[in-house]
Amino acid sequence: VEVLLDAIQNYDLSLNAKRLYSWHGALFPTGYSGLHKIRVAKWRNQAMQVVSGSVGKERVHYEAPPSDRMDREMKRCVCS
Image (tube, rainbow, N blue to C red; front, side):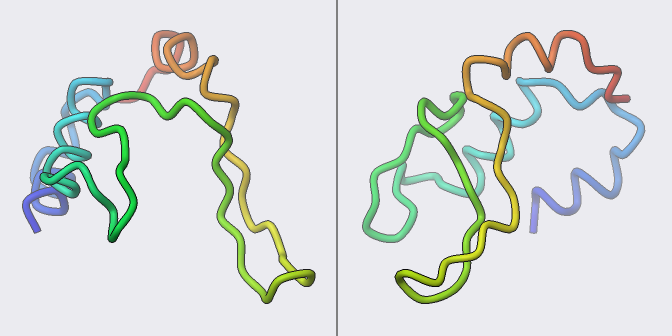
């Protein structure tokens, strides 16, 4: 809820790494997503896709940019 309130109430603030990392920390305070250990408040270090469907019939809905581009993309982005 705090992440949504921040996004709605502070929509005019810059969207930068610090703000994204704080949202990530709020969403995953234990460092786990379910039973999986995750890197909290850091850029991911592997590919990320949103996938649905059964094994062998998967459908990729979204593929994130490569993680090694994130710092560069955030620096060039005008996200405010």
